[in-house]
Amino acid sequence: MSNEKRLKIAIQKSGRLAEQSLKLLEKSGITLAKSRDQLLCRAENFPLDIFLVRDDDIPAFLATDVCQLGILGQNALLEKQALGNGKFADLRQVLPLGYGKCRLSMAVPHDFPYQSLASLEGKVIATSYRGLLSDYLTANNIKADIVTMEGAVEVAPRTHLADVICDLVSTGSTLISNGLVEKDVILRSEAVLVSNNIADEQIAALAEKVTSRIKSVLLAKNSRYVMLNSPTDSLAAIKAVLPGSQSPAVMPRQGRDDIVAVHAVCEEGVFWDTMEELKANGAKSILVMPIEKMLD
Ligand code: ATP
Ligand code: MG
Image (cartoon, rainbow, N blue to C red):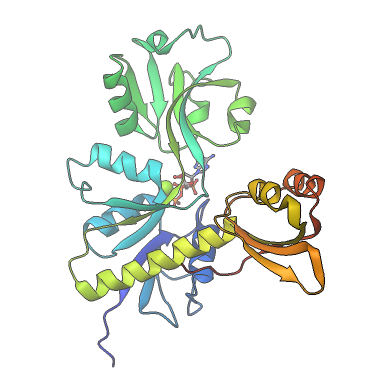
């Protein structure tokens, strides 16, 4: 049996972040030996073990060094840190991942007379985020009672468990269907790659490698390769329109003095209006292509 050191990463087993976290690892070239029903999966082609767990448990997996990396919502990490008495203080957000976007917001029933946060003085607030909420209330000098609920927070006002709620919102449709209106946003959150303090050099190098691959995947996902023909005399205008492109390659076209070929990696979205603007500046044969991998 090989005694190679293996990095361990915890991701959500099922739920809002599960699919995309797994996909992100797969795009980073990590293929799982297929046993997704288990707690632990081995990567086939990388010294990495993947723990499939509940998102709430990921900070503890990291704090106890069962895993060195984890993917979870910033909200879940910050909540543990707010309540953890320093237990989770060493966990570090390494990389925001661009999915699982949501906000932790105060929401009140339609007929609640809300003017400002001060309207919550003395009220009862239901939430699953006692730590973040009480820090926020303290920072804003508001005294209110907090009722902690694990789920279905949005029904608390209707059932008279609380006057208002503080809950995660993404589209807002759950609030609307429960007669609630979103007010103050306490926190904006997305999925994030989290690391503990990795003492072992070999494991740290593996974590660095995984992190750098994930970074490349995210960069490639947001980038496009653009090729076009530009009239030689409108090259400057066309370069100015290419979004987030540092220094495009400009190449002569055989037998043509009036046009050049321009190739550029655009690190921002290339939308129809960008293409139309390129065309309006004289660009022809505009091709926009996805990029599979990128390594700087
Ligand atoms: P688990 O079984 O792993 O404990 P869960 O029910 O606590 O799962 P999910 O509902 O799957 O968690 O949400 C996971 C994360 O997805 C949240 O912590 C948050 O970061 C993010 N998220 C994005 N949008 C929303 C939303 N509308 N409601 C709740 N979470 C959201
Ligand atoms: Mg959970």
